[in-house]
Length: 439
Ligand SMILES: [Zn+2]
Image 1: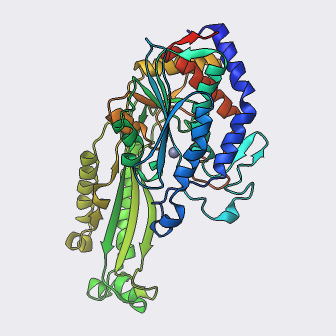
Image 2 (image 1 turned 180 degrees about the vertical axis):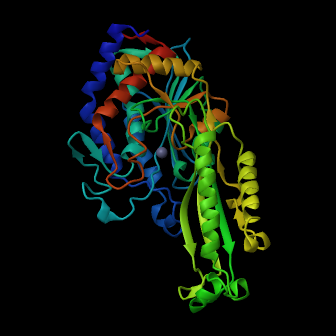
Image 3 (image 1 turned 60 degrees about the horizontal axis):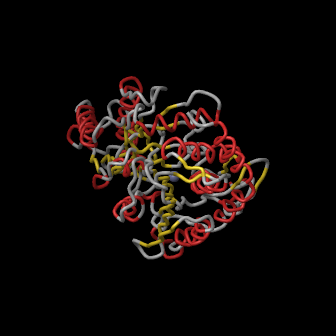
């Protein structure tokens, strides 16, 4: 339980810092920090943004006494760590967030505010990276600031990390690099937005993600030969085979498998079933020109699999399914689709027990601030909690904002969410690390 007086003093301190927090978020939204590897052609232009954001945040952290460490694993891509040394005897805690963002996408879609404006409109801050996730980063920093301002010092070390490289799964230059540099703790919170379906939920697991490219081969001919290919009595595959027609067999087959996954693939953290999917993201046929019966068709999939499954299990299931499916068609039997697993690229899942001590501390904090039972769920997307858990640091995801607005035009964060998250983080420090009154 959190002492009522401490709670009220800290909440008051968070409220008093609202304007300052909004200004910091708005300022760092105006410093674009698009991950330079999202588009290799724009890499040179984009590199340095991550370092510039962290150069801004460094004096913010130092202004209330954090010891900072800023370093680059790759030139122009600085990480920043701020440490509040514990007075002793408490458990240590990491708050981890990334400072890179995705690109704004088509500018004409940003109808509410410009992507790098950081404009405040009707209780929301707008801009690329507000929800994903400069808002969460600043909430973590200000939770510590508020706690200290209210006159309390954590007993255990509290470490705030704002790292580079998350959007392209480059933990080796960001989160994992910080672990390697020696920043470890008894638990960690990744401050990514935790909605949907619940606001400020405790996220105890994430799916794993695999990429799959399926190439389906056909046999080209003039498009006027279509009747020979599809009509009864035509000469069929002696003339041509449409790769698009054959790709539809694969597409519909994987859709059926996806429907099956909706029934069969479950995990206790994902209480609403059906989260695990085979999402077709591109479908391109006729790569040899628009006037041909197409020779080749390419479908790409992003596969969101259940946390308890390994990459190998998922790959094997899909490979077996497709090879069975190919046997049902005379052309595909002889010319099976080619599967390319993007060199085995995989964002591994994480999965931590709801009974883990850090979950319990987070639940106490959520209940203290939100005055309702804590909500648990699985993270719909993936984040650096995977790599912190892999390093042996029990880690959950809990933060302001919703993945629904991340990566979209008119991305925003609710100021109310920010304030509540900041209060929850401060309460987690109190509950997890313990605090001493500095008077
Ligand atoms: Zn993110």
